[in-house]
Length: 395
Ligand SMILES: Cc1cc2nc3c(=O)[nH]c(=O)nc-3n(C[C@H](O)[C@H](O)[C@H](O)COP(=O)(O)OP(=O)(O)OC[C@H]3O[C@@H](n4cnc5c(N)ncnc54)[C@H](O)[C@@H]3O)c2cc1C
Image 1 (cartoon, rainbow, N blue to C red):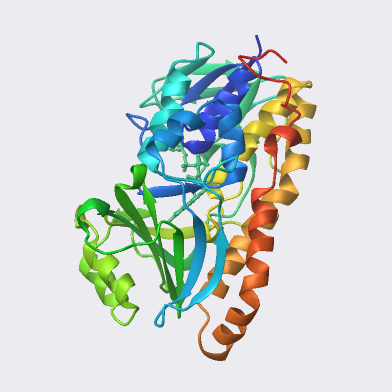
Image 2: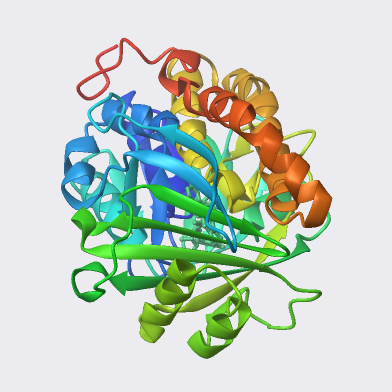
């Protein structure tokens, strides 16, 4: 049985492992953390991601712990006036799901642990990598040497696999800091729409949506900041600072910020990298943030990682390893670069002020549906030629 080594068991690594097992590959998954979990609050799983998760038969479990929105709305920061509104039919397939990250990782990890073809090693860091035309081997922090037919770097924006493959620049701070936190929806006492709501304002924006069956509200606030001084790229956030940042905003935003559970409040410096010209060398390649870190302003970084896993598995199912990896990269490059660029552009558009903001508001509605459709309609199962693969690798 052909064998893949996947470094990193985040959203991208777990999905890639599950997709590969589905097409008959054996997978060794190496993760540096002690347990499979995620910091950070919610994540939106848009229909393009759910199409793959449906194919993996995990969408029913996700649905039990997620929440389906009825629309996506953008509003002006102070007046609350709707700028764009897009309805979502909650019963449509594939669904649009909002979920706590810990719940998503939990469902994916359970599926991986119940899959005989996947072996997971926790508390193990990949330290050195050797790649040849016919195979790859890595040495881990536990002094193990793992050999495989292909090596897949799913190890996030600070990827060691990427570093081993390319002489590359480090990730750059984008001038944005994202705050995330949760609110207990059952005790908040405010009427909050069951939609994804994004408030656009000068130099910052605020997004909220329900997760965990509607019992929690996930909030993301993005604020422009000149530099990121912290050693770590994630740190605890002081809820009072966030209250001050949004002091002049619409009362609903102020109420939500004030209701955030301070123990769930974290800050992330947002970093990015330009799209790569080459994604892999010989039998090695990259998926997810390791390859194309994507700013969260279209809610697509995780979705792209999930799509990568499906297309990669489809290519490997249908071809010799080296040429299959190059085919995967060719199929994915344009899509991911386009979404990376559109997400970055949104960072500027959301934060406009004055006349520029007024002009944006007039043009936004006709564009909103078009942009969302072009992102959501992508079918990674079709792109990877996986339609025939169901039930454990029977193509
Ligand atoms: C504020 C914010 C909001 C977002 N909202 C959304 C959203 O709504 N929808 C969406 O689709 N995306 C969203 N994203 C983006 C999404 O979170 C990321 O794109 C996604 O988590 C990337 O997954 P990944 O598996 O590629 O990388 P990661 O999640 O970074 O996982 C990498 C894994 O590799 C492990 N690792 C690293 N180095 C090593 C090593 N040397 N050895 C072994 N293991 C290693 C790490 O421990 C980690 O588990 C958001 C991001 C932010 C910051």
